[in-house]
Length: 120
Image (cartoon, rainbow, N blue to C red; front, side):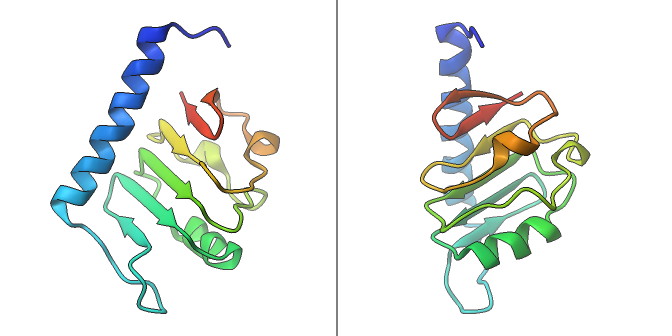
């Protein structure tokens, strides 16, 4: 898992650009409770401060064209029922602040470059 500083920096900048783009495009949808804690379009999904049950619901409905998945500061993320390899375009995963079992089901080449941050 030896990554160069420039590779890590590139991944961090890509994550920042995606988050800025999400906010600037103001692409957001309300979940069933009316909270603005789910943001998505065809290429990214961002979940924040959700219960474990809601995270599971959104993971099961996620489009296979997603290339960025963020599950941040949620109560939990269970990947046991998610075939992460079926998301061929997924290249960045941010699980910061969310207890999860991603490492147990990660057999698709994702490498953790910083605690909770994964990239292909």
